[in-house]
Image (cartoon, rainbow, N blue to C red; front, side):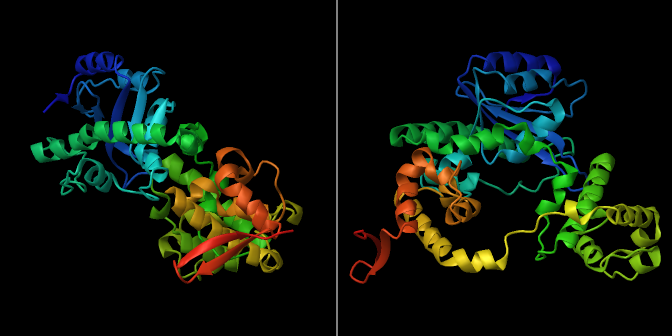
Length: 386
């Protein structure tokens, strides 16, 4: 087992890896009790050497690792790497580049929406991984041999998975198909959680502008506090409590205490004062500056038939090409297309237009029909003469 526990050892290892065309990367971390994840273990693999790095070792300096992550001559390979990349970004203020995500590559090569590393290794390499140590406490020392073996397997097999998927993308001519998704992972903004945008991640059913604006303000307050205190956002006030406050709009702490979803100690204490202050500031916002609600039911009624047909067409085309449908078009892309907002619509550009957009345009123009074939039990397309 190759374990690196000194700064000198890490520096030498990273120098060796600078000569490799790619490295595979995986991190073990803990984030149950903090806002920002605590890095506990780094695994790096390459065709030449694989090793486990202990970032918690006394005197460890991770700068050589961060430098390797931005070395333009070495591709950094992750599997479902968003959380790992976020940790590297938060610690070094840099996003690994160039990078490659094997889960994203699987989306364009017939492996489905979000295939796990375990299933990908099993499918491609016919190796069954032991995942019994998946829920280990990686912050404890010493780590036992089984934990280290589990951790190292996350990068050793990834070397061969990457080589397989890279070759398959090239042979199918689909490298361009995943470029946008890889671009999202490479963008620092992906890992910057702006408090003013935190409300967008909260599930709700309201279309009321006042409700949504108050939700934005309260969620921003909670997010900023969670970041400042490095504590999970839901540890002191949960989403259902925020939604209840938005619905009832309490103006005093006495009214705040009537909200059953909100813990009493929160309502009575300093946080209760802060919530009331957020409400006071919200009351000063002009309705002209309220959040713009989602599209109305009138739009849905008007465009629903075309939207549903486009969804069906998208599903069929995606299955034909062995590609996850969202790589072709999002629901928002389809809604904009239904409304005739074609400028900068992904559906009408590049490879997406070639395999889906042309048919979508024909469907919208009434020149393409979808019909069920009872003999083959398939949906077939038929061009309609104008």
